[in-house]
Image 1 (cartoon, rainbow, N blue to C red):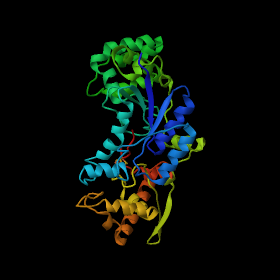
Image 2 (cartoon, protein in one colour):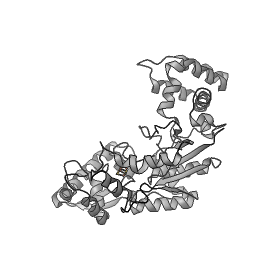
Image 3 (cartoon, rainbow, N blue to C red):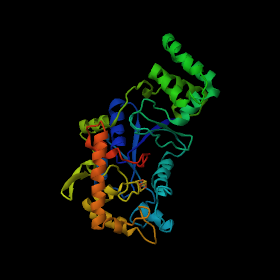
Image 4 (spheres, helix red, strand yellow):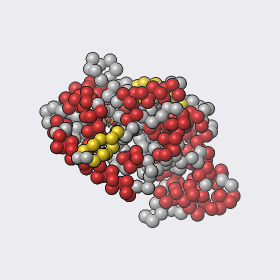
Length: 368
Ligand code: SF4
């Protein structure tokens, strides 16, 4: 049997860091390769987090695109090839070229399970490779499986097969509760997510073992090539507060860019920070985060400005040199204070960072 590799990408953000710590501590027998993609465009705070993690985990492999290039960073190298065409939400070549391609090269044709730190309180799917030899698993969620696996297992064409698999692993009373959901065909009122949640409500472990049996019997997914998989018995769901606790208790701590910093505008006090890891010039950041960069890392802001040439800008329709005009900075800060107050009034969370992040664009980070 081919060896199946276990891999986990450290993005420099809190979720992947916490996942690495959690899996190392809870499943020490899983032989996980931790890796990070060094873009050479990260904040110092991110680099410091990766170094603390390296001490905790023992080893993190560093991947880097365009390693032999004379350009100062992989980004500069690829930007030059692209004729100065800056990446954007619509043309996100940076993630593809600097991270995903390096990751897929690193895995090659090996069978691999990639652990992804999507939290239990997030409503999004993480990165799922298009390569069939790489399977994503989401240990922080109630449903650890990726969408493609769920679609295959719970699709109408698999009803009989999945029923057999479930029957083979379930206790009689559990099977009795689950059977009506397993054999119910999908309809517009009983779609994948409803069927999935109904089965998870019956019993998470049994569902996982049944999926495992299905993958082994009917597919070539990497998890199906394992003799056993400890995550099948995992019922933990980790949300943001749990993530922060894992980081604090391990001694690794939260990335310093999360630290809220006070600012004053028109006699009002607000707070800002950076809510994501990734390149300092990331076009996913909010305007207040650009102001944070301008005031807390002026050298990096200056470098980001220098990339804006020939009509290419990081923010559509607003070059950075206009963003930092005093009146514009004042307005962005006032807007942020107002937005924060509104979110605070609506949010049940007691975490200030949570309130800040409520405004985060989903899928903003480069998680791999
Ligand atoms: S962090 Fe932002 S700029 Fe950097 S690779 Fe990811 S999406 Fe692109």
